[in-house]
Image (spheres, helix red, strand yellow):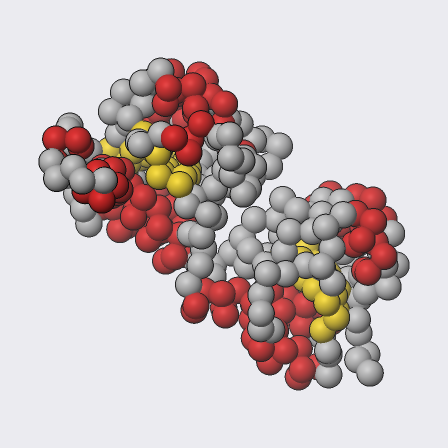
Length: 331
């Protein structure tokens, strides 16, 4: 029997070979649940030493009922499923995986941008409907010399910037937490959000979802955008006020959108975005590749293995927890 109980709170995966490869070295066998509610998580996880979480709610109520949990590791970059403040108060480390899908998400953001700019999806649908005429896509503007505005300038948007520059796009970014010299060395100009909305021909959203970023792109921002502008979102749906986006599209305030994420997922059948020819919709898939999924699973399990071996996790979200917990730093 395992020395520790490590619970996967919920999952969409068919194989756990990468996790087992990491945890078997410590003699740990995973325990699995498919929790959807606070009560289900509490029942399954109350005696767990560690949690690996996908979408199940790890709320303050859940955390207060964890009897001996040392670490919660999330499958993903974002950690909005977990109450970070409550975990920190209880001395529980929270881990994520910040670098597993840099190429995948940056490639996907650019694919959506290019498809919007060149109106690939629109013309594909026209041809398949029997209309062989590029005029359905008029106007199309040259990419070179146009401006890409990045909302957020962390690892993924920095990768987007490098790839976008290869197409001749000029890149500006809004991120109050990034030093100007970091942007400058990559030939990116840091600007305010208002200035970004006013200048950009393409806006690509990469901000994490939290209380400060929810709805940060709303009516005021859309009112400042160019009528020829497209907005791309491969981050989290609620960063964009969806009602404001729909209104902006219906009123012709912007040219279109490429969305991998939405406020409500899966998309509801009555959502007006489904009927808009100038909107590309994907099912929250930008993160995925075979290689990225394997890397994510291995690194999420690695956070757990680190902590249960007496080390701070490689990817520690709540660094403030170190005042409550004394572990070794990994060399």
